[in-house]
Amino acid sequence: EVKAAKESAATLSMQITTLRESQEKLQVALQTRTEEAHTAEQKANQLQTVMNAASGEYAAKLEAKSAEVKAAKESAATLSMQITTLRESQEKLQVALQTRTEEAHTAEQKANQLQTVMNAASGEYAAKLEAKSAEVKAAKE
Image 1: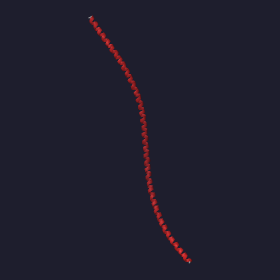
Image 2: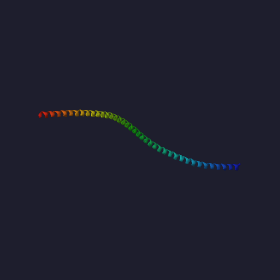
Image 3: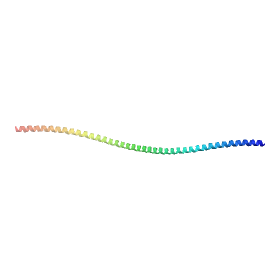
Image 4: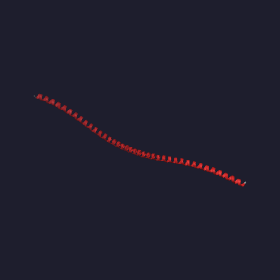
């Protein structure tokens, strides 16, 4: 019985030693994993900081682009209004030009009629003058 108890004690002692070695290995592995987890957490925090900064820059750029788009739309609206105004002015000028062209044509016709009347009157006057001149000449003779 003593021999069996000693052998059992020796076996248990070896098992305890094996368990302690396994516990030490597990402790080392646990420490390593804890350090790796801490490093990974730090890296994640750094990446989050970088992402937050990048997100802020992106938001700023997006806001700037949004402002550019708004300004471009406002400019386009202003240009559209100016184009409409210019078209309306062009239409008014076209009407005025047509009116002035018609007035000029009418004035030209009137001038031609007056020229014809003046030419006729001038011819009559020249004929009368010539007749008077002949009468004066005849009276002198």
